[in-house]
Length: 174
Image 1 (cartoon, rainbow, N blue to C red):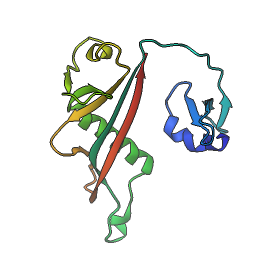
Image 2: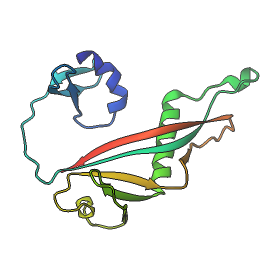
Image 3: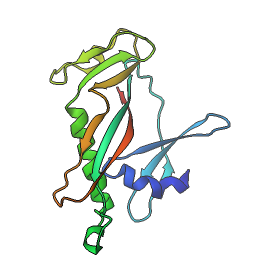
Image 4: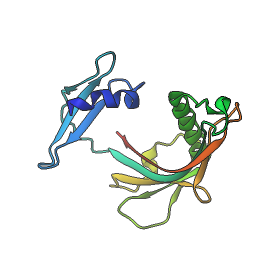
């Protein structure tokens, strides 16, 4: 697991005190690690205490999104100027956030097959208000026709590519 630290650095950039959980395939044992970035990234054993969160709520979503981003041209030398990968990643991330932010969201208990309950994103109510009593897991669906379309800005007018992605996210509300 410690060899993963350099690979996790770009993903965890900007997250304060990130924790990483690993699972041993044979035993299913969970191990918590504290990620330290910087010049020499490392994973150190984390000191975590068991805490029985009775009101914890797991939110998860798997949403198809078509991402349109600029790419390098295929013509002459001037067309081959590829966008900076880090900047391109940020553009794509912002475009996906904007596309999903514009969608209405619905939730349904993960264990139930029932109708979606539409969430009022402008409301001040806690997320747990949308969950039935004793529900610990909600599936979140973003409502849109077909796949959501996330288009990154392209001020240079470079040729674009469209890629179908499955955006998967989880969050725990304590």
